[in-house]
Amino acid sequence: MTPVHVTGEVLASRTAGGYQHLTVLAPGVAERFRPGTFVAVSVGSAPDDELPGARLGRRALWVHRVRPVGGRGQALQLVVAPVGPGTRWLAGLPVGARLAVTGPLGRPFALPKEAVPCVLVGEGYAAAPMFPLAERLRERGCPVTLVLAAPDEARLLDALEARRSARAVTVVTGDGSIGTHGRVADVIGEVIARADAAVVYAAGPTATLHAVAVAAEAAGAWSQTAVEQPLTCATGLCHGCPVPVVGEDGVARTVRACVDGPVIRGDRVRWGELG
Ligand SMILES: Cc1cc2nc3c(=O)[nH]c(=O)nc-3n(C[C@H](O)[C@H](O)[C@H](O)COP(=O)(O)OP(=O)(O)OC[C@H]3O[C@@H](n4cnc5c(N)ncnc54)[C@H](O)[C@@H]3O)c2cc1C
Image (cartoon, rainbow, N blue to C red; front, side):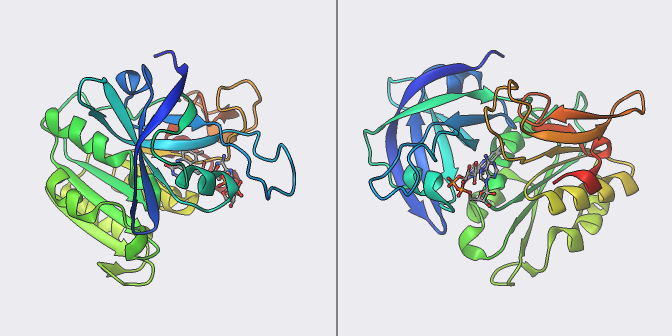
């Protein structure tokens, strides 16, 4: 669906663990949203910026949820990890602030035609799209198993809500502060086997996506991975987010994460060559 570029308004901003949750009214974006698509937002500068214009590039964010707001249409819920100047600026926006939003961008997760068991893996803030995806899959009768991962408990997204979204939930943290101590790679093979999954969906760091794609293939399941390549224009024009893949014809080629992805079949990505 064609993305739109609109001026949004911050309706709410709340800190939860290591993230800032923003509710943004962005007319037309929420209505077009499908799980796996993302938005690109413009960020402003601050008086202490060393380099004027350093924040020219828009920042990409997954959509966590879409919710109606009393009489004003649908609003986007975004999860911001304040890691650098752009995301810190977003995390500090007050209620009522205006925000330039483009979206939804990219290709969403493909949904299975049959009601097959699915495993959903989300790590850190990238677990955001897994919640609306779980909702869509459940509507189709698919049994959903969720793997939520993070470096620590503070960066585990919505663990409580996960129990409502899925039939079974596995929690993995890098420091063992909650759930299994370790990485997604340590548990994913067993989770896929236990769920008897036909499709595995994943969003998170590249190493996690790679591990999920390998485990899915070994189990004879399809995998759909949401790759997170740094994006420059986010609209396909600049070719600045290359993903090395093998096409349906078996020929190696490069696609753009922003428009050909971000969701790409895991067995098509040449993971060893992805930066
Ligand atoms: C499709 C997609 C969805 C994303 N969803 C979210 C989200 O829901 N919540 C969230 O907090 N972050 C998300 N990100 C990452 C976020 O866009 C970057 O962290 C952000 O652009 C960093 O900007 P900054 O100015 O805060 O930090 P910078 O100082 O510019 O960078 C901080 C760190 O982020 C990396 N980075 C910088 N720009 C990008 C970029 N465009 N894409 C990926 N990594 C980048 C840098 O290499 C560095 O390690 C997403 C990225 C992509 C590509």
